[in-house]
Length: 419
Image 1 (tube, rainbow, N blue to C red):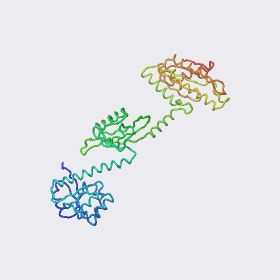
Image 2 (spheres, helix red, strand yellow):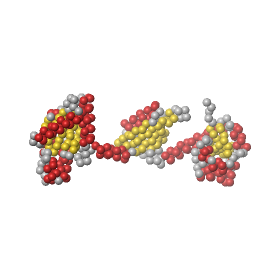
Image 3 (cartoon, helix red, strand yellow):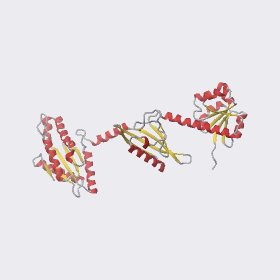
Image 4 (tube, helix red, strand yellow):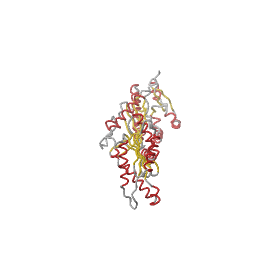
């Protein structure tokens, strides 16, 4: 496989240009341009091909450096090194070329090793300048764009964020450091390093969202990571993008909550409590354990609305919901409470035998009966209680607890019926 030579654009037709071309023909591929006007017009296409530009001092200083001035004004050589063939020492006109992005001079007599060294140094200098210029420009974007080497060490990052553990020293730099070394949230730092190594190992990108809680600040960041490869396809590092998506993620949480929470009581709505019952029944049948279910209904609630109005009725409903929310110590294990509809509620008790569930039901009944409502008589509730049995589905469990509630209503209300 033939080594691809770097391309050098030669501007001018002097004998020095021709001599340099002949001397360096085995080291570089040369293209010529004798007209600077034509060159400026076609620069966009030429720019994609050349690694450096060399011109003779006659062309460079012509008409008070007209070509160099025009090139500097429109950024023609912003990322391409420009060298001038000049006398030694350089005269004032030649030295003035340095004001227009000229990187170096090549002087007679020509020595092959010296010319190659100057060209390669110029390319390296311009590449380095381009790198830092691009880094500076990227800092203007709100996203944090970063580059890491194959060991997960930062080469640069366009922004520093407050969950980094570093001093206020303005000279502090992220370069050469890993996430483990600089981040306050060590758990996320460890995960970041693991993700880095997976990208390096697999050659596949990663995309995920992390939650960070540092200094009582909750934030969410969307992370993109892609492998960086050299010309031979070897992975040399990681390029990453970090976006602050806190507002978006909090909105998603709010929407999710709104979809599962009853607006009046703050308990789960019917769809959510039904889903939790379904999952709990399936889990118990699969993994074992006990499960009890309570169904509650406010007695004579229609009379409350008719006598005192719907606003007072809402106060009664919220009062019962607050008992279910605020008596977690009595419920012992994990529980889920939801508004089943109107004045009806469901209470799902995990790892709870029916005897304990009946005791809890009686506590709830007594608590509610003891509430004093302003300008309203005391209210009562009826409750059905049941336990998951072998062969039960969530439907059969809900039907049975509903029957228990019906029996409590039928036999006088303000009582607990176990079924």
